[in-house]
Amino acid sequence: MNVLNFIRKKFFSSPIDAFLTLSIGYLIYLTIPPLINWTLIDATFSGNTKKDCVAGGACWVFVKMWFNRFLYGLYPNEEIWRINLAFSILIISIVVYRFLNPKFKRYLFIFLVLPFPILSLMIFSGGFLGLAPVDTREWGGLFLTLVISIFAIIFCFPLGILLAMGRRSNLPVIKYFSIGFIEFWRGVPLITVLFMAGVMFPLLLPSGTNLDKLVRVIIAITLFEAAYMAEVIRGGLQAVGRGQYDASKAIGMGYWKSHIFIVLPQALKLVIPGIANTFIALFKDTPLVFVVGLLEILGMVNLAKTNPYWLGMATEGYVFVAFVYWIFCFAMSRYSLSIEEKLKTTN
Amino acid sequence: MGNIIQLNSVNKWFGDFHVLKDINFEVSEKEKVVICGPSGSGKSTLIRCINRLEEHQKGEIIVDGMALDENTKNISAIRSEVGMVFQQFNLFPHLSILENCTLAQIWVKKKTKKESETLAMDYLKKVQIEDQALKFPGQLSGGQQQRAAIARALCMEPKIMLFDEPTSALDPEMIKEVLDVMVDLAKGGMTMCVVTHEMGFAKEVADRVVFMDEGNIVEAKKTNDFFQNPENERTKLFLSQIL
Image (cartoon, rainbow over all chains, first blue to last red; front, side):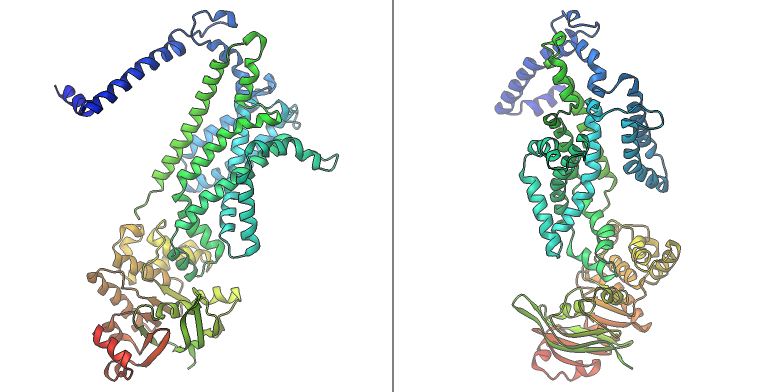
């Protein structure tokens, strides 16, 4: 009886409620069962070729056969262990991080943010200690997605902080440079920025000099996202009361000390949701690197679906990519929430 | 004995608004001066000029023999000798009370963590909140926060303490605990400059009382004189309203 009462109260309390409940129920009935049928019940999981998919549902054989390509792009199979090694270290470090005492946490954090990414890049590129060189043109798939977004995130965050502080500076040169920088990068579409970085920029360089295309792309995305980051952080800086500036000045702290110890910790805490938002947007912007011929995970799917043996597999590919993107974005979102929760102090 | 704070015909404008009009003001060492006056009279601005939280546009301000001007190095030297307590406490909400007190010792005075914590605990004991040291400001009452803010300022071992309406944001029952701490501090021989409406406090500890109105120092006298023989009509009116 209780259950019936609950249902009546929550779902049928008025004619409008009843109507909404019924129509939404009908919508769910229309969409969910076919979706489950397609992805699971009628789907084919075993087999090696498209011909094995006869059940009428999703042909996951396509994803299975192309799995390594979607993950690693055209990276040579016998060298894939390098990528696995670096990302295993990353994942293990993140897990171990939770259990360390604050002092080691700081060391591990610094290691993860600076030496580790550079070390990983060297391992990925090879060319030393008997590691075969792998050209960045062969990098791709989810691996490339992660390389681009991790580097862009690491660089755009401090740059965004500096730009936000610059925009609030009293020094006209710094202030107007920051404003100009932010407004320029926010005003142009990312796809044109990438095109410029990939295609136009080398033409402007003196002949003979060569900056790797991947590096140019990472720099472009970093500058682009730093402008957004700056505005998010500026919002936080503005929310920190004048009294905090006064108090930190009054105990003898100068501009940098006040910002590092007093203002930024409070400002950044306030804008964690905005920062997470920018990082997620950055992550989802990475497929645009196709304009300069780099194929991250979505690019690899686009490549695979045009393979003559696998025509007509676009839906499976896109569903798979959507699922992978969703996992990462959802993880970032939850992680930002957990940081917010952890930093909560009673004010 | 020379004056530790000396203001010579100081003028300040906020835009078109003339906040400080030709102010001459001095505080000698160990002297306690109370500044009172109606709101908007420029008294807060005056003491904020002394550690250059506000910049004056004309005249000179000399604190402990150092002139306040565009020279940045000078300013941080002066600020490390002048402690300030604010109406809104302005504790750092993301740091514990102890960290509030040690931060500047460590990063400005370059002391070790241990030294600065010992000193901080000494001052927290003096203001009687040593048992709150590990809490965050948001967990303390207004009176406790203000006492913590006083301890934070004292941790820099200043020669001068400035108080900008330290009890105005407090519930009545908490005013006394803060004033008690300030009275103790005064008896300990600190040079103090206090903007306040607490005339009881002024009578108890002040050597001199300064009355300001509309950016002018209207009257400045020894405490007894000030309360018993106010000369200016404006002062008399103010005193009749506040006492």
